[in-house]
Image (cartoon, rainbow, N blue to C red; front, side, top):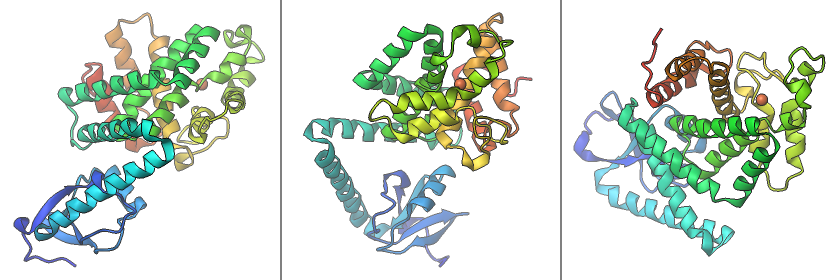
Length: 331
Ligand SMILES: [Fe+2]
């Protein structure tokens, strides 16, 4: 498939994240590998979601289309986008058209940062702005704001921790390339409710590790959280899975099920990272804040596949150390 006679001017660059992976392509598309253009898919084939996600995960930003067909390709992109908007409005109503447009712009803002090979302070600031925009928006949602209020009314220390974990988890999620509104909402809600099951535990047990009921109660809190949440209508399965799996560990030694590796839901891994990070901060309140952040970052840096998939570590470490102004690998 490779054609060495084709050069840069024969092609136009298109941003991969704008392409719908399941829609049959209007032209052939090419990848640039080691400076050469290689045909990747033929006209009328779709890219396919699996390949698309693999590319996105590997940081492939661009595909190439023959320069003389670029207008056809751009029109196709436009049509796809209008169609997607139309389907969304049909399903969720005209009043939600603005939401669709904002989510779409937002996703592109997240991708702008994600597709940079290396994070720096400026990009991290953008990322933090994206998180606050997202959080401001989600707090306007009555379901979320009621949920936070409910947590606060029951146990303020669990609620404070949950809000920290939710903000941090959204930040980590975005740093790992999650820009889709629904995915970020699931991360946020899963994090807000990750310890919901603890609210049922008698504080005399929860605050005393020597109590003979302590271990059982703690081991059971993900499942009891899910049982409680199931009573509320409209909670997405993804949110329940995050709650259930936030103490699972990549090496299979977590609880409640001892799931390992890819058996653990990716978004649960993200919430787990945020959870352990925030727990380490609270356990080290006696230290100056700079030292606390250093300690929490070290837990992530030296995890070695214990809690989390090692593929997340570098990027998350970059994002968090820049956010907290800690020099990476500061041992
Ligand atoms: Fe927990």
